[in-house]
Image (cartoon, rainbow, N blue to C red; front, side, top):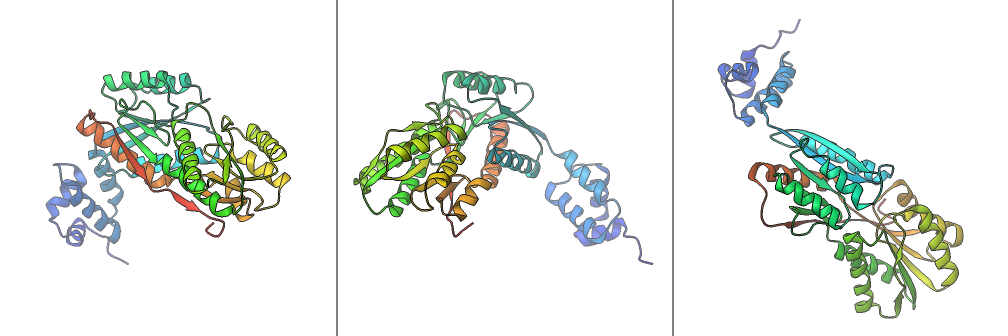
Length: 343
């Protein structure tokens, strides 16, 4: 019968004294986190019966941080994945006991975002949101900031000069990437279209600007049509895409700068053969993945969600510990480019 591991065995395995293991196990005195973790790993490796208790002691010593997040489009696969990655990043944040409070705005109305952000007062230490650019949202950020609660913009920038940091892709560059892919796929004169979610999405405006500037610079033989607003909905995008295909037989490409790509994919499947129109979308979802494989989508420009969530949690924790900075910043992430052959 195997001998049961003892506290002396744990100490020997961890390379520390028995007294140190005792302090970690019983919480008699504070022990450096690195040492406590070494003791826990040693206890786990040799099967020490109190390893779970050591883990709970280590966790209890960490300061509690509550992070609030306001997202939208709760039913969309991308935002469900986003929320799951947030939960994982908060749970894995080093040196703290993290708790994530996630709210979903029922619409894109500025008042919904502002209401939910204000509602996090007294419940969290820092806030991050995917809100629109609007004075109501800016007002909410100002109120939170006045109470010592730093605010971060995710994916779409808002409250510039008031919010702490924007965390996401360089949206001007994203628009140029989309244009360059369509230009490479289209080798003859024609027209291209661009959809944005609305007039209050700063990120979509930057993507549109980058998209248009690329064609002006490198593909002047391609005509960029007037921008279409789809409110990030499948149905509007579907109907508008069918109308575009009907009115412009020489339509060569489409870029969905925001949501609603499912409608464009459905319309192309219904009215065109794969490759007839080069479609570029943002984010990899079950719909965009299938469309890539079927050659209806030529490129999906994706946000690295695990990295974004880990980075924003780290920035939020630093702002809580060090105080709100008077300087607002931008934290850009490298986009992940998914081609038909890479999925």
